[in-house]
Structures are given as C-alpha cells and as structure tokens.
Length: 316
Image (cartoon, rainbow, N blue to C red; front, side):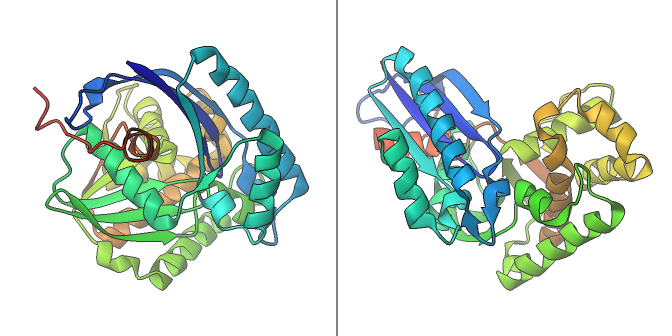
C-alpha cells in the first residue's frame, strides 16, 4: 500500500488529490485498488489571468501561492511522490515556457504540461476505471478547453481539443457575473465556430460519456432545481434545455437557487451548460453518462504506477 499526490493545474481550479493505492503485481489497476484520501480544490480561475494570450504576473503569483499551499497539505500524508500536471491554461498561453519556468522556480518542482492528445487519452484511461467504455464519444469540459474523444471497441481513437471551456467563455464573452441573453448566444456561436474549425462534427454519436466538474455540476443543479433534489448520473438534452429555460426566465432568481448547489461555479455554470447543449447538438446525442474518474486517475495509472487499467467487467 502506497500514497501518491497529484496536483491538477487547470484553467478554473488547482486541485490536490492524495491517493492510497493497493497494487497487485502484474495485474491491471481496478477502481477498488484506489482510495482517495484527500480531494481539495482551489478555484484559482487562472484563465481570467490570461490577457491577450499571455499569462499575467498576477496569474503566475497566484499559481505559485496555490500550489505551494497544496504542497504543504500533501506533506502531511507521507506520499512516495507528488506530481503536478497542467492543461490548457499553461499549454495555450503565448508565454507558456516563461510562465512555466517562473512557476517551477517558485514551487521548486517540475510541472508536466499535457498536450491535447495526452489530456484526452488520460481522461479516457481514468474514466475506464469506472466502467467499460465500448463505443461513443467522451466529453471533458475544462475551464479553458473542451476535449472530445472517439471511442470504439473499448479503445480511444481520434481526439480533438476545442479551445473554449466554461471559464474562458465567462472571461471572454460575459460582462457581468451572469451572461445576458445576447452573451448566451455569443458563447454558443463561438463554440460552434471553433468546433467546426476543428472538424468536430465527425464525433457524432448517440452515446456520450462525460467527465469534469462542469458536467457533474449540471447534473446536480438539474436534480436540485428541476426534480426535487434527485441525483442524476446522466444528462439528457431535455435536462440542459430545462436548466437554460429556467435561467432565461429569471437569471437572478436562478442564480440565487443555484448558489446553494454550486456556489463556487456560479459564474461558469451557465457557460458550461451552453457548451453541453452545443455538444448534444453537434454530436446528435441522446444521452450523456457521467463518470466518476478522469484525467487525474489516468495520470496516476499510466504516469505514476505505469499499470494498465482494468474495468468493471474484469472486477469481481
């Protein structure tokens, strides 16, 4: 039994997870082998610190402060190693090399920047811990980008990264905390444009699989505001339409209610739902199943433990 720390440096959150792992030699990693001892996030909102494509000095300082605080927390768990990876916020900024070097100097640790393809692949691996993924399209809506992965016969094949996420939508296209009706349409139109530019239409599938906070938050809010608190492990197009219709009727009343469910995502929640709606339309999908694990667990398996992942069909 061993403990490992992973810091996920994202566009919206910087999250520390501490895992306790029971590894069986020469056998695939199963979800029963992993226990999450700590899952602690800070809503750093670093995508809002990207100005004209460049990460600002304030953003760099905020990243250093947040990661150092996570490293202090992790020091109490006797981890064998602590890894840090970053996604779109560091990957896509024009001063990526300089910003990464400055942050690494400030935390005295190396940061692995995942490419679009690596992020999507690790997300698929992590999601596969939850259940066997036969065919469909996997969706990961982050703060700064949205990843789509084509799945066939249990394998992740083609991948695309659309450079728009929930936080970047808020930062770039809203003038207040909540988007106006015109801004809602702007977010949707921009996503459609970027998705078309990336050729995302080929990811059409009736079945979607979702990972990430934006998707989980949508299911929570739908259950709380539209269905008497029932918890959902899937989303349908009608669910997202119900959320956005309720928002359109009275944005401020909707926000007051949603604050009880997603207080730390109130500014990015509607942009995230707009993206989900556009993905349902783009993929001509009928259902989105929400999975528990994602990029962090995929990173743990492939980059830290260097073990293949098993799935529920193998687990008995």
